[in-house]
Image 1 (spheres, rainbow, N blue to C red):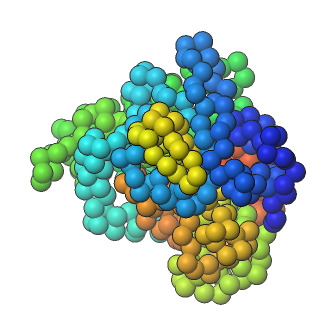
Image 2: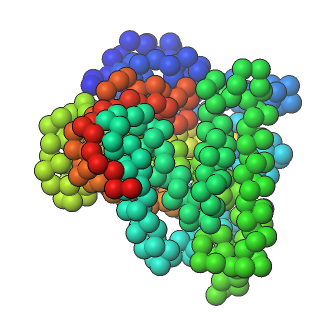
Image 3: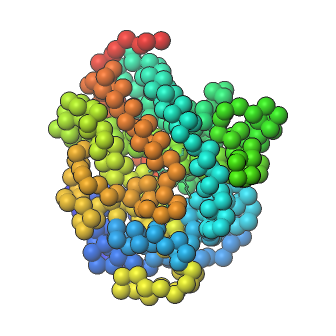
Length: 429
Ligand code: HEM
């Protein structure tokens, strides 16, 4: 697929929701033009969702960072480019929202370092090994559910099920609550997509309620684990570790929301983009299927580069500095477009080619190197690898059979539904 530059620079408005409903080729064309000619272009703030228009003033706008080199530079210097005023929102988050959504992704040092230390200790090698075994089991069970059908909605029936079960399992949430977690996370990341926020409901109210629901679920679990700790991540987070550190109950809740949102939808979308790309590029798929272990080592990262499930993160300039040819001032907002960096001709040979053997592949799908680099990158890579290995073993001719139904969002490159077909196979259930 090649980008199409149908929009002139003054017709590009990344804050206009209709920009994000354009075809992939047209959007890529716009980003290619920005990268080449206006790599730090200024845009007015996007429209505020729902009731926020009544309570918040319009923000000052932002610069769209579209070059790979600039994004890596920014991510390496958290002292200049801060996350604290909101990394996942162009709008500065009001206090009431920070209660649920003010997790470590939107903090700076020293708070970020403390949170990341505690959380990383809970993601210890023993936990990761246990989870790796569990990924094999869950992937097998997910395929068992659909194997005899000969087709299904790949996103809902396959891609979504693995990451959801893994995160819930890590935290100690039982299968009875999976559906509630799934629904709440869809609402949080939906940007008001009508499939997830029903007509007549204020998107902001739905967003807050979903946050509240996940917080309540987690608070109950925290209470249980305080009395009876187990070997799950929740217990590790609230039990004082060797350095005498632990998270408070509300820190655990907002971390859980971050995990559900950051780890669930992103991995689901990566797996869905993977099936789509492998269907559209049969020669690449044949390479992967011929040698799944060798190709997965590079193919998984190519899926993340290609799909760029997280479109952007935000930073705020803390001190006067220079980036490229531009002088930046304290308070300026920067939006780091990972999708654009991942197609930057300066960083990748033939960036519009899907190449499962691409190496080197310095993609920034998990963020660029720096203190906020994705905590779950190893886990996500493992989930994608295992899923495709098992799919190719058990349903070797599985392929996307319809057009993807895309999420209407400027933040998450999401696929809501994707029909697939395959020759029915026996279920091991
Ligand atoms: C393909 C799947 C995934 C993608 C594309 C992805 C992408 C990202 C990106 C772009 C960031 C921000 C980096 C920055 O600001 O510099 C991030 C941060 C984060 N991710 Fe992921 N992620 C994925 C999977 C996961 C999983 C499975 C988990 C958890 C189990 C997870 C947990 C986190 C956390 C906790 C952070 C915040 C880290 C911090 O602020 O220190 N992610 N991820």
